[in-house]
Amino acid sequence: MISNADDGQQSQYDRRAEVEAILAGDDTLLGRVYRYDLEGRTPLEIAEEEGNASPGFVYGYRSTLKALLDEEIPNSTNLALAAARRVRKWLKTVPVRPELRADLQTLEQKLMSKADNVEAQLVEAEDAQGFGGR
View (cartoon, helix red, strand yellow):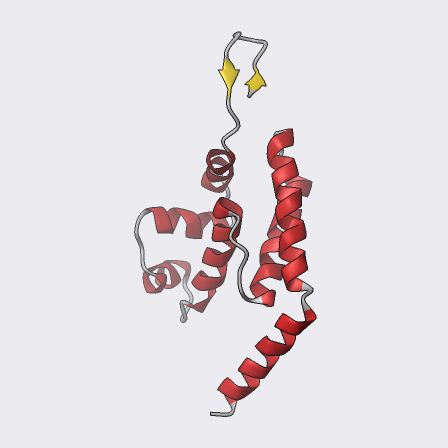
């Protein structure tokens, strides 16, 4: 619990609620994808709204959202790296309370651990070659 000296009340740290508040005010594509998801839009609808021919980008942004909201580490090293970059950007540019800062720093470390996993990178590269060769 955190004490609020101004009104004498106690406020509990709610990590998810704080991340949701940041995303709700985020004017970047990540924030817009978050709001589109809240509206129940499909990836194709999101792509059309954003003027993209393909909805592929939506899946990457959703992966970053899952990392930010639920601390879910993507299976893909590339997606983990993208999410880690967003966390670093938030740490540099978004004012957050100390508890969320600590959580985001831990999340960034976990994401980078996944992104730097050489074995996982090799598996992804092999999978991509096998997919491309079919």
